[in-house]
Length: 248
Image 1 (tube, helix red, strand yellow):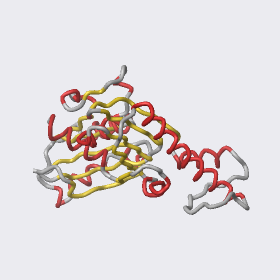
Image 2: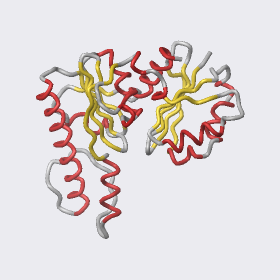
Image 3: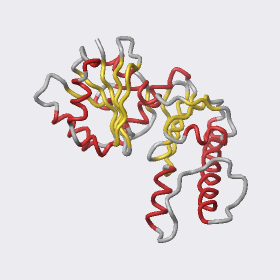
């Protein structure tokens, strides 16, 4: 038996096929906008090496319209899609916030994916840059900051003369031209933002956290973070896999 799970983000969607031990066999990555075409999921299902799938698929999603669209596309098949927030997640992790319905599924999945570490801080460099706090195995909340790529894109679109740039590492001085100045602003700005938020969380909790990074800019900013960090590109998927294994 194999299992299909996925994470629908604002920018990108990741779909994984898991083996019977809930380890990743194959991964498929798409721009989320393309997921409105339900045939992408059906193509994955029909692949020869994806036979013998459990008919229940499990997703985390922060884009409800995409999830609903995929569910409709599978309506007259043997397959069905569940969203992790529709399951009894309190059996897996305690969530210590007032309105759980407004908490993003990806952030819940991240917390479940790392809860074995007991005290953990997850930085996810997605469309937004999120910091999630797991203390004594309990999800305690976190911080949401603007995403790196989205911030660069918004600045470029809102100005007539500032271009979109791809960040470059090794920024040792302020800029001598527009590109260098922009690069310095974003690299130094996010370096300060990341370290400051980590310091604030640690000083408030007075706990030593294991710090894990995931998402697109994890490798880029790893060496700029003052604390010891570990990169895991599959934290969210691991969390969804844990939910599937324990609740379905």
